Amino acid sequence: MRVDRVSVDRLLEEPYGRRLVAIPLALIVVITVLDVRTPQDVHLGPFLVIAPALTSSLAGPWLTAGVGALAVAAQVLIAVLHGGLTTANHLAQIAALIVLSGLVVYVCRLRERRHRQLVRARSVAETAQLVLLRPPPRRIGPLRVAWLYLAAEDETRIGGDLFAVVRTDRPGSRVIIGDVRGKGLAAIGEASMLLSSFREAAHRCATLPELAAALEVSVCRNLREMADTEHDLGEHFITALLLDIPDEGSQVEMINCGHPPPLLLHDHQVTLLHARRPRPPLGMPDLTTAGHGDDPFVFQAGDTLLLYTDGLVEARSPTGAFYPLTERAALVPTSGPEALLRHLHSDLVDHVGHEPQDDAALLVIERTAGHH
Image (tube, rainbow, N blue to C red; front, side, top):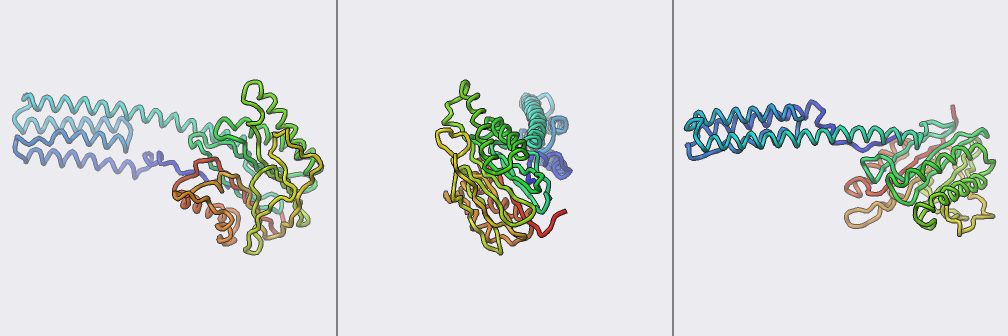
């Protein structure tokens, strides 16, 4: 499942937004009637510029130009009824209204061009996100899956957080969720590299420690290639959480490479699954991971796992309080991954007051009694 941010730009494309154009038309009528009925030394005609200016925020340049033309026509009518069209004051007002309306139309055209460019950029970004993340299906064996991705750079829709679920032949599923140091477009290359390595190694490696070792080698190789043109290696690393979930049995293997611990929801209780044998983030060659195994835990039918990146728990309220994911997850009724995800997303926005300013990802996995 995917939860998108709502784009207010689409309001202009809705019939409701176009119906609002009646407001500037009504303003033209009201200002014209009032100006005609007031004494000649009172001039309300200059207020007609409000009509095209307001229209530019509700419609495109053509409709804005039409309303501007109506405003100029109304100013001409006022001039004819108030002292004559050739008076210096009325000629100045008409000329000023023509110039201002033209400027409003020009700005509206620039805004519409930028909007089209932004729509194209978002379309490309959404396609890149689908190619990079390859969103998992809602059902994978005995697992039900839902996911949320929020990018810090809203125009890009993608960032440095990553996750993937790979179906293996044992049978079972292997899961990764990670966070590349940095955010936005600068982190996409490293995220893509790790995801590609994971999807390949998840099928090749017999055990989870072997998979973690293969990913470490891949990340370090990639960082060495970057070292010649980028910053030093110490500034690049990727936190990652790896899971091996078999279809049969209830024991799941976990390896945590410097990533926030997952949450296990069992019988309306939430457990923070701290790793007893934690590893350093991927790409930190000065820290050895040799000899470390995995951390097993029980994942039964009806249980739910919450995997997340630090952008979620580090999101702050206006008072500076971090988002209490563990507490909030315990309050959500068990009603499936999609409902849980929607509730947490809504609660997160309420806590912060807006969308988080850092990349954030949340992967919800529920184990069912059987699979299809």
